[in-house]
Length: 225
Length: 225
DNA sequence: CGCATGATTGAACCAGCTCAACCTTAGTGG
DNA sequence: CCACTAAGGTTGAGCTGGTTCAATCATGCG
Image 1 (cartoon, rainbow over the protein chains, first blue to last red):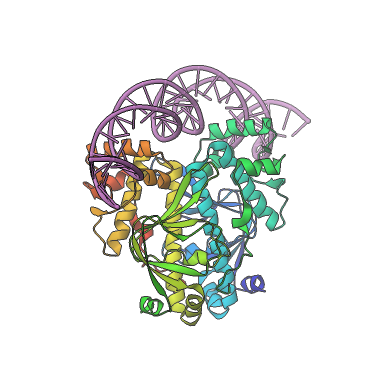
Image 2 (tube, each protein chain N blue to C red):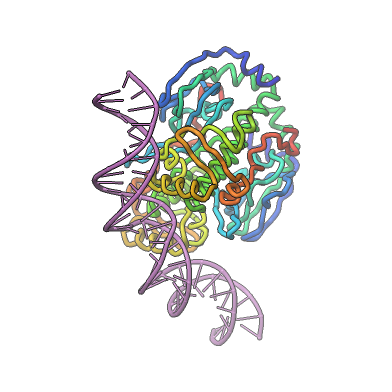
C-alpha cells in the first residue's frame, strides 16, 4: 500500500494546540506534515492586516508536501484545533517517490485534486454571493469528510469561527453572521461553534451551485495515472 | 535539454483563432497543449451565465497537462487571440516523464508555480479592492512575459477586453472601465485593447501589493528538485 | 459604408462593510 | 461550585464600493 510506505518513512509525531504554526511564510521548508487528527488552515496576510485563508485541511491530508519542494513557503499553515501531526522530512519522501512511481503518482493526483479545489474557491469568491459561498464551502467540507469517514455530509465538524469563515470566503465576520442566521431560518443548514448540520443537502448544494465531481480522487485519465 | 525532449514527442501543430476551445468542460482529455504563440484563458461558467476566468496563459505555457491526467476536464480552456498550438498526446508525455525524472520534475515544478499563482488569485479576489486587483494582475502578467522574453514589465501584451478582465478579477466590466480610467489619470498604468503600459512600476506593485517571488521557477527546495 | 463588438458614461441601487454596542459561552482560577 | 474573563457571536445604523441598467460613443473589419 502506498499509504503504508509513506508511514514507514522516518518521521516524528507532534502534538500541537490550536493556533500553532506548521509553516510560516518565508521559511525554508525541510519537512512536510501529515495531519493525523484535527483541522488546519493555510493563509496569507496582507499589509493592512487582513487575512485570506486559501485552503482548509482535515485529518488525513498531507498538508504541505508540494509546497515544501519550493524554496520558500509562500503562505502560513496554522492549526484550527489541537492536532496530532506526523512530520516527515522531505528528502526521504522524495526518495520514496523516485523509487516507487505509484507513490509519486498518488501524491501527484492528490495535488491535482487540490488544484481543483483552488479553482472552485476562485469561482466561489469571484462570482457567488455570500449565501452561495457559504453553502458551497459547507458542501465541500462535508463531502471531503465523508470521503475519509469522518462524519456525514449532513453533520460534520467545521471548527471555524465566523471570523475565520469570513477570511476563507472573502467576507466580513459580521456579514457571515447575518447570512448564517438567515440560512438557519431558511432551514438550509446550521453552524455551531465547531460543526455544521445540514438540514436539506440537495437545496444546499443547489444554493451553492455545488457539484462534488471535482473532489473524486479516483478519477483516472489516459496517462495511466 | 528537457524542453527539447518534450518537443521531440509526437505532436501535431494547430492554428486556432480567437475564441476557439482547446478544452471543454466535461470532456475526457487525451492530449495536452503547448501554447507556441498567443494567449489563452481557463474559465468556468456558472448556472446564471456568469463566467469566472481562473487562469491566464502566455506563449510557452504547457497549458493543461496536469489536468489532462484527470478523468474529465473541470473547466474550459479558450484562446484569447489567434494562436499556434502544439497538441501532445498525454500517453507519450507520461512515458517520457517516467523515463526521464528530470522532465517529470521540471513539469512538476511548473505545476507548483501555477499553484502559487492560484493562491495569489484567491487573495487578490478575496481581499483586495478593484484597483489593487487590477494592479496585481498587471504586475503578474508583466513579470511572466518578461521572464520568457516577451515584452518588458513596463510594456507588454494583454489582449483582454474589459469584460474579460472583469471575469478574471471578480468584477464588472463597467467597474473595470472606471477603475482603468482612474489608474490612467493617476499615471499608474494604461490599458489599450491589447496591451498594458506601466508608467510607474514601483507604485503599481505597491498598489497591487505585488511581490514577484512566487513566480520564480528557479527556486529549488531540499528535495533535490 | 455598415455592422458588431467593445469602451465609456450617468444614475439609481444594494450587498456587504464599518463601527460600535451588547450578549453568550466556555474556560480558569480561587 | 461560582465569580471573572476573554473570545466569539449577535445586532443596529449608516455608509460605500461595486453593481445594474441603459444609453451613447469608438473601433475595427468585411
